[in-house]
Length: 302
Length: 278
Image 1 (cartoon, each protein chain N blue to C red):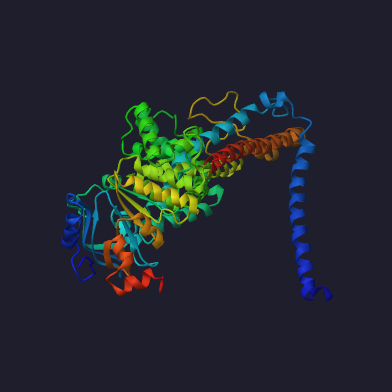
Image 2 (tube, one colour):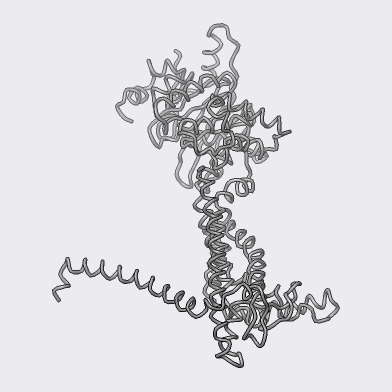
């Protein structure tokens, strides 16, 4: 136990933390490496732009790429404004000792802890069946239009799932805005809403983008919430309306690897699909990070 | 006997002073505090302050840290409303109208009584947009040409125009500390206030910038009524016409600046000015 002398612990800790850092690199490298190794061959332009053929053993996965992108965009349209509003309430209006603040803060925390599959069931029960059937009765005279799995309901389900992450990021960014800016605005005769929308929120925009990035990453990757709320395995046409079903990359991977009739034949395509999903996620993140970097530079005056 | 102390009402004596000097008409009081007290929750921060702020004069408020000078300054444009648990008694009057009346439009009040803070804090926007901000939020922009004129006018008044006229659309954060503070002054002047409140405007600046700010205050008083809070006594002596000495939330003495600094009536004033405590 000579290693456990006082200096021994120092050396051990330094060694241990270094090993842990390398282990992370190793895991990531293994992950990306294995997928790239198996999936690189089939990654052609035809794969990215074509539609699936011959029972998913040939062709491309463009509909799944399209569906994933559409889902994520629609989800962002719902979750970002909603999340920003809640964050503004928490940061700028809430009375920290009041009951509404404490209850809603607790609600956001609880929402963050709900398992993804539960959101799937929620989406089915509330959006598809309850709201969908209500819309059908009210607008379509009872005809089955929205009371079934649909792009709209999947996007809404995903937006509820990613709401806590957006709220937390945006609130943190709002709190980071110096109080001196608010005071300067008030002292010039600005009202509270003017101060928030002209000074505070613009300064917090990089944080809003961070929240959006995190939401999009989860939205593109989570499969459980959309299992029975809108995703489909094979659709001959692309979704053009909000009540259509759609193909989606994560869902496609799940079905390909567990329920395709000939697993060996579809295996190569499986890896390539995973590679595409990873690539899409990295690409979305990279674009958003670049935009955020530019915003931050503009705020700093450089 | 020209001096006043906290035990005597201020106004009658002041009027006498000004009327007697060089046959000038009486300078009207722009702001008047009458027995104004302020409480942060249970703690009393201001004790029955009674003061007059005369038009087109610079009034300095001096005193040690924590004596209530910033609190009193912020009461004059109701910035203390932003702090929870603040309670006031007594009155502050602007042109004879009480400020803390529920019917007062606080937003308009803050346009009429502008403020410059200790830390220069221009918005992370362009120089132009900083100055234009007050005009935009108050709906005073008019046409694009009018807006440009008003922005230029404000920057001229703040003695900053020459330094920034070629980079109006650059970020305000590229300016030096002294320039940023003059930008904040321009920003406050753009909405044409009547009174300008300055909370230690030069204490975060280097000596050269400080001198420029003091020169600016001297020029501005022709058009504006100015109140300056400062912990720098020499600055108060250089810059102001009247000085109020605050101590522990009360006005100890209020008089014309030369008199306060040469023959103060109150022993505590003399002790503070001569540096026996600070």
